[in-house]
Image (cartoon, rainbow, N blue to C red; front, side, top):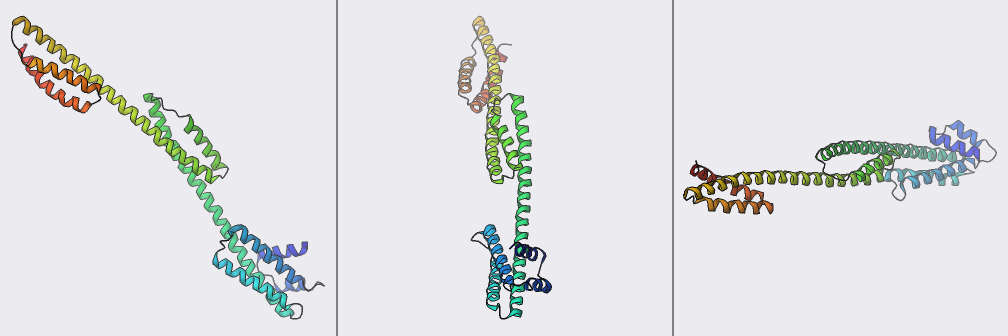
Length: 274
């Protein structure tokens, strides 16, 4: 049985069985040896196809297999009476099985190559995400946003391990989680920056109001001391209070518009106290 297996593997791996090889096999006392070799090859090819494709064997390969299987059945019928037909049936079956073996080997190599490419693509994508994450991390640390980074750093380590262990599905899922977290981190930094900018605008606006309030108070004191009337003072005070309310309500755009009105009035007030 060991000789049968070696002979079958030899034919499937290295090509068509020569007439001399067939004659050597047939020269043994048991003329059914050709049938046993062909049947074993048939079984090996069938198992290989089932392992590789399951119920979805490519039609061209399936056609070759049915032809080979038919040749094996013909071989069984030819023996032991028609030896020449038996040799022909044997060679036909082995040629077809050897062709299938080559095709499935190429298919397996293509899948491996595709997997390698997929792994390389995942590695490249992970590297790009990590570079972008590093830039976000630098911005976060510079502005002290307080965003939590430990989870995404752990996911980067996990994705690297999964890629290195050829866990493509796991790595893909982890990378998708990383992308989602990067979006959250970016939004957090953006919101923080926006809030910081808003806080700076508020701070500047309040300082401006303090300066304007000093001018108004000075004008009021002079008006009381001289008995002169400055009608713009009431409107200016009203606008100062309105702007303070707008700032407290984060209505910065509306506050800026009111600042425009207030500045025009303050110019008139300044002329009155010169």
